[in-house]
Length: 389
Image 1 (tube, helix red, strand yellow):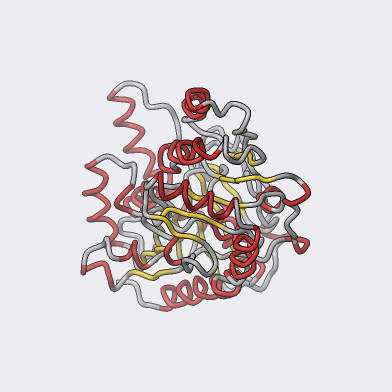
Image 2 (cartoon, rainbow, N blue to C red):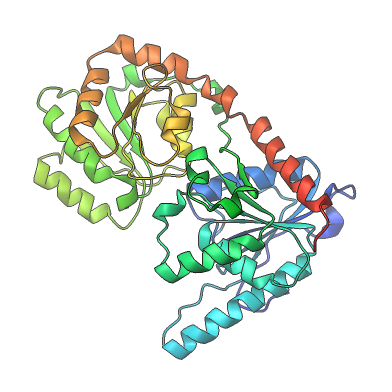
């Protein structure tokens, strides 16, 4: 047990199923709102249902409950490793001790394999497990070229990723970033896209005309570009409004930008979207203006709801999800005028919205939950059965 101010939130082992396929430990820095956290939760829950014994380690102290619901049989253990660093000496001590505490927690969870999500967590886990003969699968969740790590972390990643037995990426585009030496370790596994709960049907025509965007309010998501694309359409199409759901560091900036563009009454920021399907069902068009992505979950969810979608062809994800002109519209990345034109094209054509939305629903077959989880499970079984040198 790792000491520290944390809570253990898990079912006792005696209450869990006695028949297990094996023991797995998942690691992520925090179970907050976010695409990576959602995918990890879905994957962990499904593997638990399939008979795997799971421990989930996070770096936070557990004072905030997981944003997404965990299966009750998952042993959830926050490690309280995200302490403030302060002075250089304190920062040095924390960075030395953090891998040691993590290593202790991993050994106590006694896994046959470890699966870790997001670049810095991947790096720290691989360092913590030096010398342990436990296979580690690391997973990048955004295009690695756009990671927010410092330059030294890029160099460390290049070295330590070679210690992993598998590198899971969401798109072929992401795979091309890594060296030839890493290619044999790479598995491309997209995110699962589920059929909407309760057979969601669009209600937009009775709720007005709504453009919808969802995501963290940060530079990556490109909502500033969306505001500029929407501004010239307002006077021509006064019945349309834009909703941008999410929270983040750019909220004040984006609201100020709305004021500058005269969009105060045409753009709203409702906050976090915990149940996106309910929000998507009331929209008319979904737009993804991101500068870069990994595999945008919310884009797939919008398509699964039968929404017509518009997206920048950013690295990476949209081009492997949208078939341009068939089930959505792909626009040259960061081209504001092209985005404005595409939005107006959909806003003025109910027929086009209907045809694209109808085809978009097929995405749940291409990226079904069963297919994606089975791919992960096959990889896990493979690395567990492979002799560790």
